[in-house]
Image 1 (cartoon, rainbow, N blue to C red):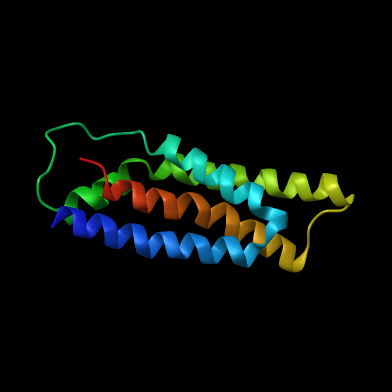
Image 2: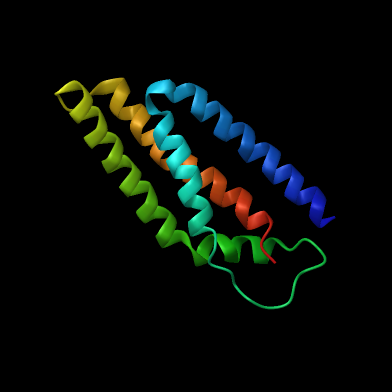
Length: 122
C-alpha cells in the first residue's frame, strides 16, 4: 500500500510540476530546475526512527511540517533570484506576467518536489 501512495503522489505532483514548467516557459526554466534540485537538498531532513511498512498520513504531514521553513526560505530565495536575473537580462524589473511566472516557478518547483519527497521518507 505504501508504494501505491508514493506512486500516486509522485504522479499527481509530478504532473503539476510539469504543468508549471510549461506554464512559466523556457525563460524561467532555470528557476524550475534549480528549485527542484535544491528541494531535494531540503528534503534531506529526515525524522529518524524505524522504517514504516504501511502508508501513514501522519508521517507524511509530519515530514512536510518538519522542513516547511527551509522550503519557504528556498521559495523566497528563488523568487529573488528570478527577479534579479530578469532585471539583469532586460535592464528593467519584471512586471505583470513575468513577475507572476517568477512567483509561480519559485513556489511550485520546490513545493511539488517536497511533496513528492515526503512520500518516500521513512
